[in-house]
Every structure is written in structure tokens, then in C-alpha cells.
Length: 115
Length: 112
View 1 (cartoon, rainbow over the protein chains, first blue to last red):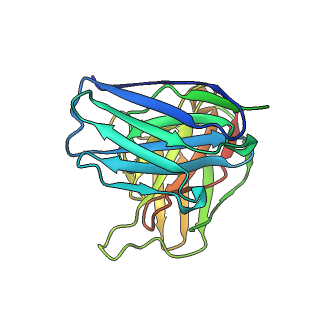
View 2: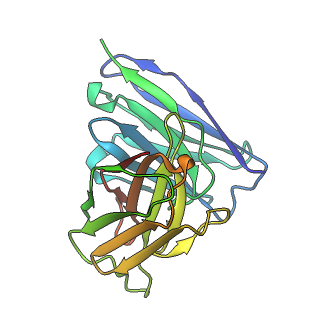
View 3: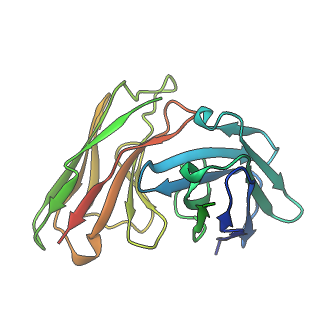
């Protein structure tokens, strides 16, 4: 059974860097895309970006190059960094398997940006 | 970006009765590869979304057959044949035909 376990800091100050990781259990990273999505009351569900097992990544242009997604196949882990956060980045962040995620999602990490 | 508009925003339903949710796109979601990547998700409070339908009308594994999707081009519909208590929550449409970015509709809250 595939499980995605996400972890990372949940409270940040403006201008800091958000850093989250997602560990994949019970399945391979190969042949899949791995996606980050966030959800806030203001913006709803928002695609952040994705990466494939070869390391090719795609991003939401709205994030203006602040986001970086990386993958470590040896650790079965993919990660998100979002620089220069503001209060507008406050959201629940999800990792998921697939460009169009199906069954396999992380549990969600609430991230609050506050001074 | 592709904009998806759902209606209604709020849908009170009665157990055992049918329900229908609309999703309209500001441009056709027909992809040059012949597919239409319009998907439906359901989310309960405190949980991640769960995909119900992919490519307009294909039910994901384990999804009850009371859920059905239809539509083409810019207009799509999710229908629930007979609403059950576990269907409470928020339904979202999402397009993957033209990305990045993938985009979601604003959601329809179903209350029983």
C-alpha cells in the first residue's frame, strides 16, 4: 500500500523559506510525477508544481520562480522549497502522486506565515 | 490560466435524491492528443481531496457507481444518482489539459 508522509516546519516569518518533504512508502518513485498542491480559504486549491523521477520539474508561473521541487530517489523522497514567503503563502500544503493526483496524497501540512 | 467555474457554490441535498454539479471552463479542455483532462474530486473536512472521476467520465477504483461524469469542450457535469450521507463535503473539478498550471474550480459544498 502506497503511503505519502510529509513533514516540515509549520510556522514561518515573512521572508523566510518554506521547506517541506514527502517520503514515499510502499511504492517506487519511478514512472510517476510527484506533485505539490496547497489549499487556503482565499485561493482554494492551488497547483504549486511537480517533478518526475528524472528530476524534470514544472511550476505554477504565479509563484514567480520562488518554488523549487527536488527529488531524491535513493531516499524515496521529494521536497518543496518556497522562498521569500508572505502571509499569502499561509495554507495547507499537500504532496501527491501523479500530475493529476488520484488516490495517493500526503496528510497535509498546515503552514502559517506570521510576524 | 484556464479558469473553471462551478455551480452551485452550495448544494443542499436529501438522502436518496439525485444531485448535479456543473463545471464550466473559459476555454475548451479538448487536448490535441484526443483526451479531455477534466477531473472531479471530493474532499471531506480535515482530509486531502480524493479523485472520483478522471478524463470526464472514468470512475476511479473503488468509487461507487452512483457517481457519473459527463460533458465535453467547456461544459461538464458531475451527477450523484442517489445521495448518501458519506457524500457530504466539497466537490471540485480540475483540469489537466493545459498546464502548467493545473487549475481547480472553486468548489461546491454539498450539505445533507
